[in-house]
Image (cartoon, rainbow, N blue to C red):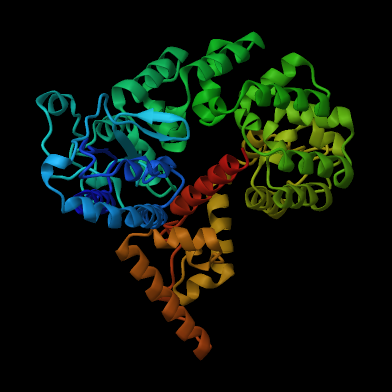
Length: 506
């Protein structure tokens, strides 16, 4: 009896010390003298087959069941003590004609087998030996550098990044976008990147445009080839030529990331809102493919402004959009400012604006300079019925000026530059730009020497302003020396922000 109890306790203890799945087999003696039949038939461990119980609860039930069984058998031990004193010849040995069977809940087993699952998955040791077959089948990834904030640390280890750099992809742009760097590192060049590059090449995208396309839309590398082919097939079914599709994909990198349903809805929207024919709709979208990718809110606002605030009729608006599609995506404030100057200051009626809609695609400062210059010359006459008529077409406004126009225009610009006054305290034009979020980001990207020069000019100008004085004339910033050092960085920041906004609205 004692040996059986000790064996049971040792087995149970070894179970709960292990975290792996184990099969425990209890071999019971067939000698009735060592283990009474009543104890063997007691339900000691079958409830351990219930997986939902925790190990501590299972151990409590084991001890409780064993105590109850021990109490039932203890009374019989008093009677067996008298028989132990008898000679061995009086004891009839127990003969078990068949293997011992334990019954619990109607289930008979020869050996009690209990499976205990203490974890979702087995925990293997790092020092555990493995077979040769397993070792041969193991795939070890190439060693990568530790976590880095720049993709340049991974270029030498990643074939995908090396090939993208050779294509002209600007990794410094991609690493600034969230989750794009990790996405590129997970791509396999042969399986993921190469098939899509071949597809774009067969589509007609020039080699020199592949780097630009992926730099602006790296997510095209994760699109399935079936989806890309379906979208191109849809555009061709709408009678877009192969050259038009290639041009649209090159100039609107996100075009193929949108579903066929969305592209179809966009084409239907422009055809219905503008009242254009299918041919004119294709022409407008081909010339400005970002109409299919960007948000529709600016388009709706501009259409409303052109009808309500500017007073154009529907047929006039159709002609303007057909000639200058950029009117649909132009900044609403700048568009209203330009129209107000052309219509109210230059006294140009609606019919002339419709006849020469290019005037709405001109920069405000440029058209203001030209008008001021023509006023200075006494040539600001835009009525075709009057003599010395100056056409509103951009080329004609320059070509109909006198021969010395270019020289006089430069002189006028210098006069306007000096009249502004910021050059008298040593500032440049880009030093006077109001610092919004885009300008701050552009300033952050400036080279160190350019940034230091900017800060010196600003501090000197602040000091002069507090003293109510200006620099000597020989130290004024000259028109020829004023360089737009911030403009390229600012344009890049604004373009990136618009792309992120368009992608987030998908």
